[in-house]
Image (cartoon, rainbow over all chains, first blue to last red; front, side, top):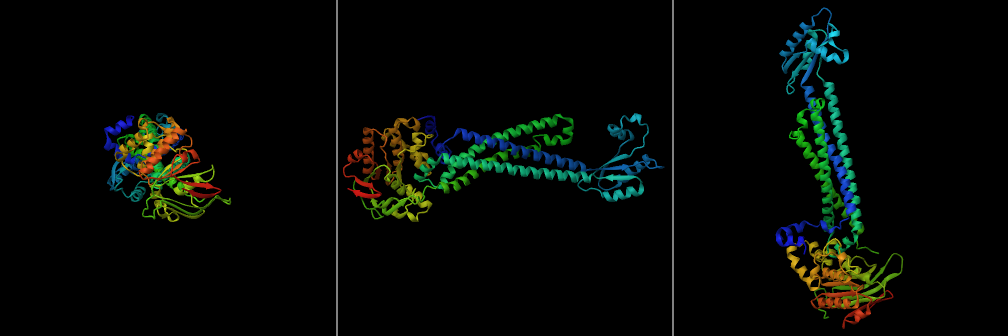
Length: 323
Length: 231
């Protein structure tokens, strides 16, 4: 006997235990079809896993931006004839500091404000004392935020030309964008999974037709539908797992590359934050788990779909027919 | 060649006025009536295309008759559900004309297949399978695969697979069809040995020389869609 039989001799109990579950080899291997199916599952898993990873990445970035926006409001004071804007700024800052829920108030100096406008207006030195609106950045406790409308009303009453921007329109847009992203991705995932299931259905039917004689032999030896379904189910679970793991690995590599790109680019790093791109962060771990879960799900999908297909196909391939 | 009654009235198989037609064509089999008793030995013979394989398929329940009654192991097959059919097939062995071995499995795995299908642990049947393969002269080919075997070796493997679970009834479809007379005689003696150990045998063949080697063997002769029982 070959090495496999030597293995039998050495590990009879373990081998017997495995033997109970190993029915996959009973399906005749078809290298071309099997490799093609693994390749299809690999591609579809890669798309699905990458989508799942990007959804988590995008959702986390969106949540971070929303948190940043909702923890800060901006007060703008436009220059008014006959009023000293520096006095108005100080007075507004004092009022804001007294409000409950305000944690920090910072007045942007004239020079800082001019620097912000440089991209549009050019060097501040050439503008010489141009009268421009001034800003106060107000950090708030997002868990118990201040009464923004009341503050707004009081500022408008005491200091003419004051406007307060709590970024609501931006957070609303971001929320809509985030939700749209999740819905679109979920729809994409459903489509990819449906395509995977259909590929498995066709492959299973093909395998059953190709193994028709084997199925017939099984029947005549006393196999029931459940046994035959289990044989094919294990075969396709293995193929699904192989394709799924390959797809998930490639998706993880692409996501890791994305992390390096984000980490190495100043603007992107500031935009997404290091917490999101760190693989050891909660979001990073969630992405890894989601990608692996997609691979496992694809394998289970292959297994379940092939089992259902076998049962439905057997009723058509049924051998006990009236001529 | 002695037949002994059992709890189903002594019959493993009973056909009563069985008729079979394909579509609107005339009947392929007409009013077929016969029975197979435990431990009996019979040939099913007739010209090519006379319906020998069809009768085997009717016994195996891979075909349903157009009319008439078939009883297997005392059960009316018209009343059988899927589980009943599975249980019934587990009591029969079949040797296919074209062997139907699984080319990707070894000889050992092919012969052990009936046990595997029944969910038995390998440790419980391994010795039994190896002993049987040695008995039929394939002890040195346990790990060989069917594509490298000769016709005779394939045939013996197919027979071993049919026998390994010690069926009460063995059906063989042209088991010596592609073999030389010497090998065919050896295989026939193997069937006789099996019959002596208690298995009822039904061999479908058109080889008159083969049938003449067995004295006392019953002959079920198919001719003009009818069956005659001789002996």
